[in-house]
Image (cartoon, rainbow, N blue to C red; front, side, top):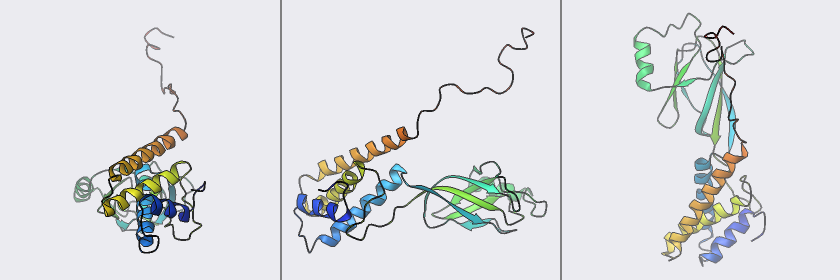
Length: 225
């Protein structure tokens, strides 16, 4: 298989290793590859991007963009401002409803949303209700673009991309055919997905072991320093 592998290369590897029919089973192989691709993208959180939503005064309920697989963080930039507020705090729908019921949701006093919760797949509830056309920036994990053309390549890095997509598709092909290698292919898919997740964690760098401490050091005042 060529390196880095194209969509066509991965298809060929899956068809040959699983002894599939290169014509009749090709559509299945393409679907299995994309299924493995989407699953790994969500599980590893490899693809991250941002989107903005303009809020409406008096409206507290919204729909997340369809591309959002997982929310990492959200922050509000008040209308007319160039500065972001603190990140929105994730809470429960119950708490938001109780805050609204308690009269803590005045829409005319210029509040900025500080809390949010997700309802179902894409429902977004905010508190307090926006009083202006504030803008939310969503930092989120995205689904990958579907592989379709023969020359398409995964956005994952190699050597992980080829192995993840190949073994993920082989596990599905083996289940389809009852191949005795199915369990090993599934284990290989899990292994390579885990390796890629670990690589992405290490790619971020190392968090310093010491942090700046705000305020007076312990014992500062006790000894009159």
